[in-house]
Length: 383
Image 1 (cartoon, one colour):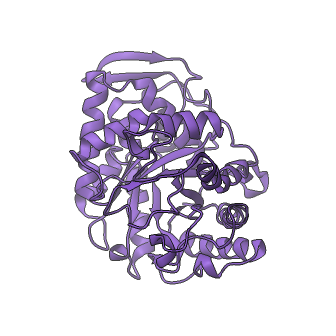
Image 2 (cartoon, one colour):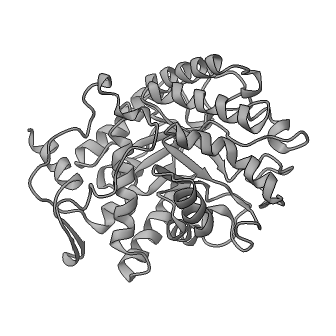
């Protein structure tokens, strides 16, 4: 094994010593990083025909994982411009980010080389590959030109799977390995998602079937799929990027919104995105992104989701408070990835998470829980 490969693997597996200024604060046995990592039920990720993956190397000798590294792996930050600047490359190299979020403003003919430069920077720092994500839903919300078509134009599972596969091919060609899609909300007439052409047509069962087929097409192409916006915002009339939604749902209506998410989880969807919306029936005080009742109680324990939980944009106007504090609250609630639309927001989130774990507000074990899930996800993606 080459030295850099060996060093990268040392960060991923082995005895883990969490340090602040070289002072060890916790010791984890060699199996700690692997404990609790398993495929979600029905996941297509166990397919041996897909060949060796970037993290398939055998267990190396013990190594260290720093608190700063663990904090960084939970951060997905936006990028300024069409090329990563020196600061973003440094963050990738130093392990201060675990992923990058792309918008239309970042897309140019040079996108593949830009994303490769970021992955190269992570590799130079002996860090795991980055998650490179974008919203490629189809219709009004697509950051790159090309597939998929609008979800409301997809009426069969075969077409949904085909559109997912075509989308995966487009994204992988551009070195993007996470699609923040499909929308799994059961969209109501008059809702903001209906006006934007987002969401699959039909009943909750139909939405679940179509969304699962689309996700299967994505993941078959080694691009992660993201079921959003949990626990379901299809009834809202105002965009949650600008207004904090209030999901006034009866118990029956809430269960109906959950049907597609149940279906996607059963079929092994990689990620679930928490909504910037309050659901009083589940948690009257906190939006889903900050609600342990929703992220842990409902999503993980009741629905059995074992994959990666990601927030919606924590810089959204609908949320209040310091951006760094938002990131800490989201991780406390159970998020594995905090999503920030800007590079500055990503830096604020990283600094706040590191300070929180140094102070003891967040434990090293809590960060390790998320890191294990992220490691399992990254082992199966295109780079």
